[in-house]
Length: 96
Image (cartoon, rainbow, N blue to C red; front, side, top):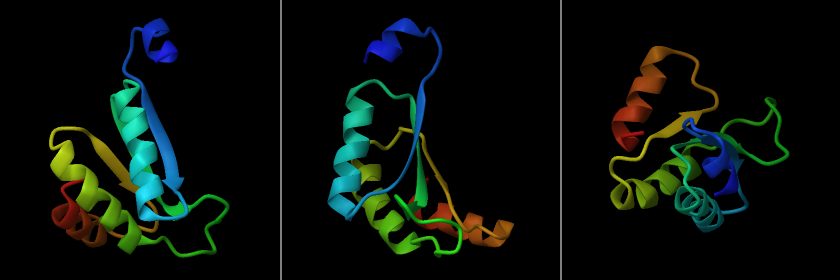
């Protein structure tokens, strides 16, 4: 909230998936309540590098909880989208 007050520009956050779906949802909701204008969620967990495949299933679960609650909030996603078709299909499924 302090950052949002001090900077007269939109504030976005980028996170990785946490230990489970609910922890990630809770953390994202805290950022939204704190005034974030957008949240980017990376489809890997904290501590994973690019040798570990992105966890699209968990990312979809997180978005399935958040999207109905925040239908107009900008959620950005990334992690292992190797072509436009994969990205487009994921966006269609999740409305991210």
